[in-house]
Amino acid sequence: MKPLLTRPRPWRTLAALLWLALGAGCASLPPPADEPPLVVASPLPPAVPVPALPAPAPAEPIAEPTTVPAAEPVNLRQDPAPPAPPLARNRLDPLQDAERGDLWLRLRGGFAMADLDGDLVRKWERFYAGQPEYVERMTARASRYLFHVLEEVEKRQLPTELALLPFIESAFNPQAMSRARASGMWQFMPATGRDFELRQNVFRDDRRDVLASTRAALDYLQQLHAQFGDWPLALAAYNWGQGSVLKAQAKNRRAGRSTDYTSLRMPGETRNYVPKLQAIKNIVLHPQAFALALPPLENHPFFQTVEVDRDIDVALAARLAGLTLDEFQQLNPQMNKPVILAAGTPQLLLPYDSANRFVRELAAHRGALASWTAWVAPRTLKPAEAARLTGMDEDELREINAIPPRMLVSKGSTLIVPRAPHAQQDVSELLADHATMSLTPEARARQGRRYKAGRLGESVTAVARRLRVPAAELARWNGLSPKGRFAPQQTIIVQGKANATPARIAAKKPGRSALTKKVASKAAASRTAARKAKPAATQRTRVAASEQTERAQAR
Image (cartoon, rainbow, N blue to C red; front, side, top):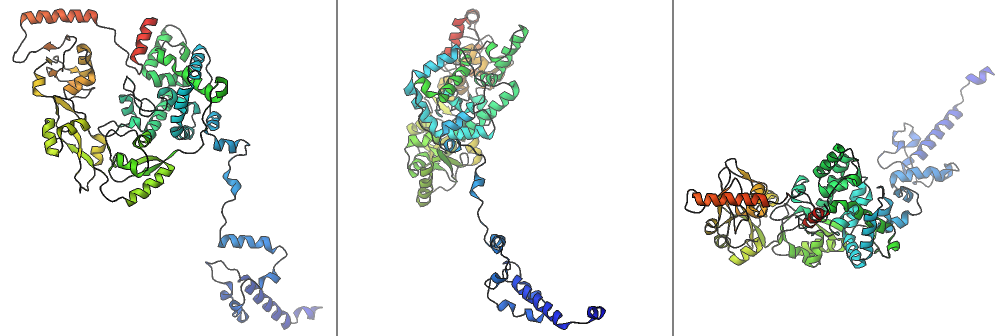
């Protein structure tokens, strides 16, 4: 047996070499596109002609019986297949398809606030159930915005009841304006809007902007919930102001009472605020129980954003989108002027079909896009002089810029004026975001009624309260902000007749350096009478004047 182990067998060696060559040739038939065939690297002479063999056909006889599964990875490398359809569903739920098609069902699925019950809830349920036409108008308006609001609420993992707040704030009207000057779908006061980066200037008011106001409202609600740790209290603070809620809680603590929502003493509007929301929630959950029918709302966006990179007239944008001016402003209600400044409003909201049309028509449009632009007054001017400098008719200038009679345009004010036909430069971002308009009484109006501020200066609000004139009007008459201050001994202009003479402001007639003793005596008597008749200070809240009267009567 030993000689058999050491004896060379050349036919076995040759067979092994041939088998290796054949195996190398088979392996080289389906090479990846980015790799060279393996046969090129083979050092054996018989492997050289292998590339000339037919492509995959010879490999089939050599393959194992399980060749079909083995071939699939090769095909995936050459032509990747799309992801399997089942991966698109993130859960197995028999109601998922229905939820995809019904926005109301999706909304109900996210309700998470504790229910409130009581007489006030029943009262508002009866109110809405008794006005089906009003509910129908509200839900018709909501159909444009509710999907977006619900999307934003869900992104923040908030209770979806918050998406119902615009029903009680504005009936989902983004152009709503209250008597207290709260504006927009979420009813922001001017100061609160500025706190949450909602710009309010000559050209736009972002409190009416659908996207910006929704973002700000949810920011505010999240902040209030983090502060109070309770949704009813957070909602009360949204309506009444967090400072007012904190004061009411502090008062209850001193009296040894509870500090929850139902235990606080609050204005009538705030007392009814959460019950209203609960009533709307109950109607959305069970409309049939109230003999109401909610219109079907599909669970998909009503609008999409379209970018604009040039200034464009509002009327032209609406026409290019195939919409009426009213339809266009329902989705873009923030514009104060008839021109959209791309530097301040870089995107528009349009229904899907209208968005596609707008893009096509804008690309095909020939001619100027904007017929209006911004002009800054170089000095304080009469409207007639400003009209002459800008090539406008004075009446047109007054109308489009809301300039009342006997007022001057203050230096630095921004006016909207016609744009030159071949002008190429659009309004700058600085002006689009910070344009202001200030008016000053004409000289002859200045001589009518004049006062002097006290030695330490006065705030516009304090002077307006003492004179019983609107703070906004007093600020406008004197070219100040409603939150501004008069300098010590500054002359204060009042249009018309003031209703009281303040303690620290002495009347000053034109051409006289001081009051006579007789006038001073009358002024002192007037101050005494005014002090006795001075009404209680109103609360600085979002509560309407009618609600304040109701509270006073209730006491």
